[in-house]
Structure formats: structure tokens, C-alpha cells
Image 1 (spheres, helix red, strand yellow):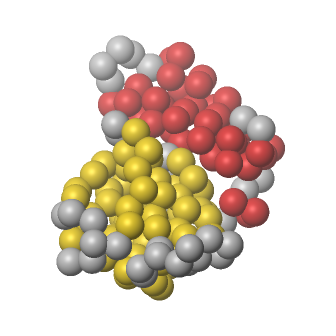
Image 2 (cartoon, rainbow, N blue to C red; image 1 turned 90 degrees about the vertical axis):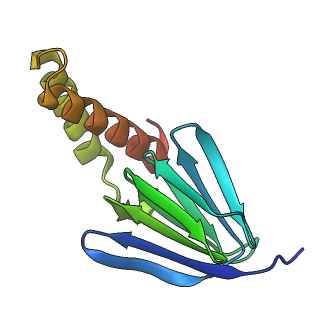
Length: 137
């Protein structure tokens, strides 16, 4: 069943990675998973690392490994601002496992309440999510 389309845009610090009309945006916020359809009420949300899915149709889904960021829904459009939005097929499991191991080591060596510890915890969440997206984390 076709749904009403709306504008969706995905931006990273490197620039725009997606700008098209979609039927649904699916991602994860700090309080859980969310699906945005056309004419959604205005919304601002903090995003966690996950698989971002942009449904152009039921069978045409654009996927990204999404880092932390923000989602804004207003005027029948969705803006996703994230640290990273990577093609899942480009994810290297070995590299992600190395990054996860380094983040865990950094966490073990950091002091409680330090900025280093917060950074390590965020990296652990990101690399675990990306490993899961890569298939088997």
C-alpha cells in the first residue's frame, strides 16, 4: 500500500548524504525506536547509533549506519543531523572490532566522570551498533 511521501534529508559534518522524498523514516531515539510518516506532528529528538532506514517505497529502502545526532520533523519534512551516516555495505567488521576493543580499553583506563570516559562510552555504543548492522555484533 503506497503511503504519502514527504521530504527527508540526512546531513553529516561532511555534507548531505540523502535528499529525497520518502514514505517513512525509521531510526532510534534515546527513548526508543521511531517511525515517521507524512504529516507527523512537529518533533525534535536526540538520536542514538542504529540503522537508519529511509523507505522510498515498501521495496526501495535506503539504509545507513547512523551515528549520534538529532532528528527534526516540521512542515511535513524530516531532517536527520548525524555524526556519521555510512553505507552498511562499506562497514569493515575487522576495523569495527578493533575500534570497539580500543574504546573498551579507553573506558577501562579512564576515570569515573571524566570526559574521556563519556567519549569512550559513546564510542562503544556506536561501534557495537555498527557491528550489529554489519551483520553479527
